[in-house]
Length: 442
Image 1 (cartoon, rainbow, N blue to C red):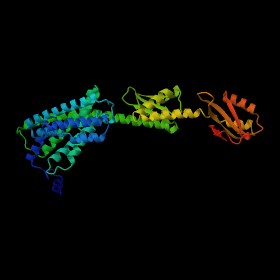
Image 2 (image 1 turned 90 degrees about the vertical axis):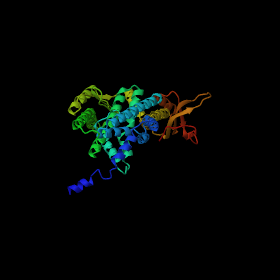
Image 3 (image 1 turned 180 degrees about the vertical axis):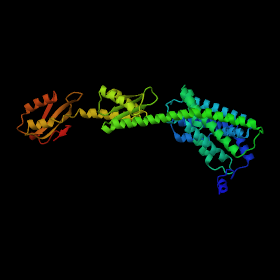
């Protein structure tokens, strides 16, 4: 039974001859002629994809990139202790890395678009998950290389391990003198290269490829050196993963605090920004129509520590100008047309308001003072005198023969603070004027 299980998962089934695999690996190491041109073109494509934030373009660049060759070659060289092959692989990888950085930096330097997109940002903070992706992606890749039937895994490995985007992001960091981007992205690229190489080393050792040395002590030293390098590479990624975990935890706790203390109490939050990397950490919020006193804001700040938000400051934005500028700034990151539409709508509303009387009690007062009135319409219309300009005039249209027109006109002028009021009694006319623009009718 146990033998059957081992036979079922045995990696030697379907294995290509070791000599042919080594020949194939060696042939893909060199970066000269066509390989170098393909690499440069792939780098430009990936840089454009990062520039315009297009995932599809970035994936296409990863598929045509020949960067996997020297990395796998270095893994085979370590697994077989072939230092001539290792030297050649490392040299080719360094050339490819230098060319990639130079081409991507040149592209981003001349590109007029230097906005930081989400695809760029995602390559600047590697963590332990990137280590796992690189390692298991490398395992899949080398297993596929050692098979008679290569199958489909290799393109998937090229996409999953993502060697091109970090290099291009590092080039962006160089071109814009943003060295935090450069070091973060280059560290991710180094992680990918190293752990693909280590995964290749493990598979080569497991499949028992012939070794170039016989001295066991020398072999142990190499294994010890590899173990030290793994620790050196993996410890920073654990630290970055720990920071990412704390940031997600803080964001989730802050969201829960906002929901419990504000949203559940009926306060409509229209703006929210959580700052984890500042000192102290910040929570900025603004409300639709709720205002808080300084004492209330101080009380909420004291409540933060009790809710797991230590070393955090709550800022409640209550200045209209400040809030609007912040909201428009956030909206403009996604769609600049939104603010333009808001401005247009606001202008139309102001223009419409000039023709209306915005007083809900106005009509009720008229009914009390002049109960005999019927068919009341009122609003502001554009009056065109014998000049080249127009002006607005309040017009009041009604039915009622017993109404004192002079008294009504005087009352309307005082009540609405209008200098010019026109009265139209439809009882004396066949129909109201056709060119009036009425604001309300009862």
